[in-house]
Image (spheres, rainbow over the protein chains, first blue to last red):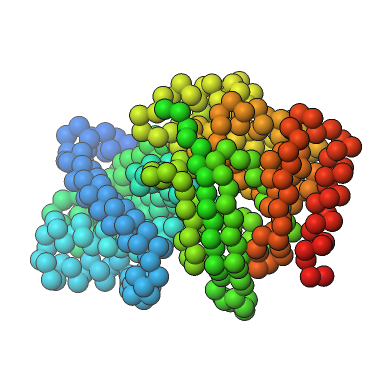
Length: 250
Length: 247
């Protein structure tokens, strides 16, 4: 516990130092295009209370949530199928390689062209960019399933549900967590590009507007709000979840 | 519901492992016929690689790719408790949960606590398997096999790589469990002393491809088998093994 608070204190000091350096640099440079920490934080509070930051943040998060869920679900099913059935693997392996190497930007542009500048196109583009990585991770996890435990399950006549719940899913869990975390890291970046290209709201759209107006104060404020949300989800949901689910390893 | 021990009639014509990646095909079992009557404690004794584990997997229904038949007495499929060479516990479930997972639908969950007490793991019931010693993990695996109230118990060298004292304690525990919960037992071992200590009957298997060379029945009750007698029986077993093999 003492080590934990020390770690928190260390992080707090490091963060304060960063803000101080930033503020000092801004005062030294004295340029409208390099606002200081204080000015940006002022703007941030103003935008939260008076502006539409919360609306944009919500729009972005909703897209992330839907795309994330869709990619995880489809990727898991396809990955397990490819890991289990050799012919499915042979059939789809080249597709996966192609999609892994296709830039997210290309997928977004093509979908906007084909489906119009719609919500569906945006979410599909984000989900498709993440999908192949999930498939590859889960395929690897499925291939690594323990044959001895499978034999145990069969000899004790465990039904399909119990085998899945007690034998298979716990083995796939670490792979699901890796897919979730690395996938989320990817989605955070892609969703902004997709919004910037073809959506009328969301953090990505606003950043484009601020870029055109050279409104750097707002641009940084919106980015900070976004980073704060990403880190909150990472630290308050993903990490505790991971610790709880993998408790048996300690 | 009391367990009804089941007899088994084995008639394995051939079991082959197909060739793969530079290894040629291997015939593990060829022409193995045997009858194990209900309630018998039968040891399968033979050199390593003579298809003993393969035979257990065939009987357990894990391995279907063989020619021949495995018949159980009675109309319903027997409940089979399997103790593997490695304990094969689920690492992400506690000892108690490992037993609960295999319970049949409608089985009385109280049986888990009783069994854990019998094998001396009541205190460790909520440990994850990574915290168990080798001997404790074997005891947990033994308790799991008994948790389904088995008609047939398959044991695949369950006490190898334990120190002598721990293995002796586990053998005594196994005999106690079998005495209180009757079942037909098939016990695979390559340890002659272990075989003559435990079994009613020993089937001698040949080197691969495995078949039954000879059998040795031991009429003397287990509790009367002292060290000198065990020594004599081991010598007898060795003699028979030599006598019936071509080398």
